[in-house]
Length: 298
Image (cartoon, rainbow, N blue to C red; front, top):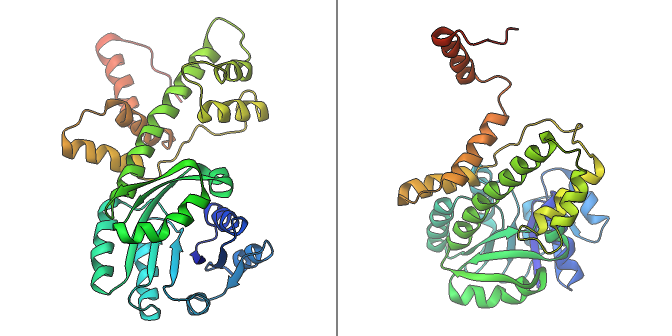
């Protein structure tokens, strides 16, 4: 297939190279010229405007978005519309909120543009060498796109989750689960680090990778991170929230589904971004007032 990719960041560029390696023609566009030039140096045909990108495609044009969720997606779609024709295809491969995806699907359907959402997992390595894709699309469109998804994913690594919106919905919950799993690993590692034994945490992560109940890619990455910095001293204790954890918690509340682990993991992300917690100051002050407990002073 000939694919136009908009967004050539870490995920978009590696996905483009993945497609190229599987025999697809890829035209890439990004707002920054140097980003396009970097992709072109690696075999992607560069486009320096949306008009140029669309002009390089053949009907039905296939455009894959790998840009941040939110307003940017709507802006790019608005800019593309005058350049597209009925039957052309847009795939949103980013982490858009599924409700935004449903709205965009209806909007584009009225314009005659076909739209699919692909929740894309596996990180940078997955984008380059084999991703996991959760695809929401009408049946006919998925059938058309399936060979491309088969090429860019690991064996068994793609699923037609259902109608438009369902791919991003499944990816949203996937990322919520990811929050909880990483928080549990972090808490366990901290207990080990502060416990009574002088442990080699990298070695612990390594043995857990082999045959244990908690083995998996996150544990592989834990050993990798500790091999680069055994105490993680070079990293600040801030873990930003990119949105999907919050959306998962909001959906759980809407559905009245208890999700305490994911919720706590999300709140710990927020706590990590605070230089100081006023709430904790309040607790310290109250303990001092009622019990005379010691307060750490600046």
